[in-house]
Image (cartoon, rainbow, N blue to C red):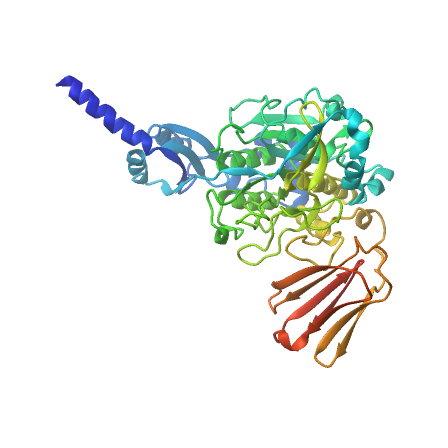
Length: 519
């Protein structure tokens, strides 16, 4: 008899455990809590907020009501993460436990967590350092395309900026010669493994090591990234061996980065079809997107990889790259300097332009032991993050959103844009020299119902000479965009009658942009 009862109880327990899942429990308030920003924030975080006029005593920074947290903890399998910004805790719980929690008067909402992040890296090939000469065309190109030498000539190296990196691990960063200059100066300020709740991050996935090298690595005296003088916060947020590494680690890391004085965050991760639908890439649905925008409201500039789904069914950017207040970074091919086939496309579901800018989608990086060439917007993003640190060093009084705009304006295509390249590749000359007006490189002619485009000079390089144009509706949403290889002076003819009244056609060639509005 007793054996049957025990078997029945074990069966019920098994059913409940099968139903167990991760959830956000969102509270109604932060009643009866106090907060001292001067004991909580790093001095650099306080300095950032004061410079940008951001309150030190904001409600979102107050801790959670620990009585609420304790009651949740008593009624779940595991309490995981506490988020001040969203007044929430993540938990592992079954349906029976959730029924109890829903009845608590301080519980506002319960949301399931199912997000599976994707590293925005594609594939990698390892080489010995003796092979570096064979990789120089990529290594030099990933710097030259953003005019890195102009920053270097003026001693601009990201000094004074603090960059947080969210990734799956940083093996050998504590011994790798590519980061000796950072270690020697004590510029790895803090580390934290959010998957194991400990400081050690120098193991696990080498993806973070590669990413850091694209921001600040130096190998055999050659820069792999621009911000060799910056400070760093290294956060392990993903578990490489386990598919269900959820969004709560990203949220915990972004609050940690804010607390510890980050000016810039690089995230080469994305959340797409495993949890969300394309229509949810709207800049406001996912928790990580909302957290990225919250970071922006705290004065931090977030760089996030656009993603590698450009040649897959998903195609568009993922979260948090859909956030409106962060720089989403696309990838270009080193040979053509054009969109690399796997880089995810914009726009967002609500038709905002993404990506914002782009950089090499193939980079030379530092692996655990060897030099690696690796594909992915994972590496385009940190290349831009290092650029941002240098650019910000030239304009130290700028806010993060002012810098956001300046990075876009520095793009090689600006003011032209499309949903593959954004505004193009950021250019250092924008920040270190007076901007010159581009020379007129083409002209438009109307012949009857035809809009014709003629180059003013013969193309110089038939293989790498490109003409961009797009057609926009009256709301500024691109209906069509194309990049043409240029072989002759007469390059394009558009039937005006095929366009809608209010359409604008925008053209770009060799730095010169011109628009034609259909009336």
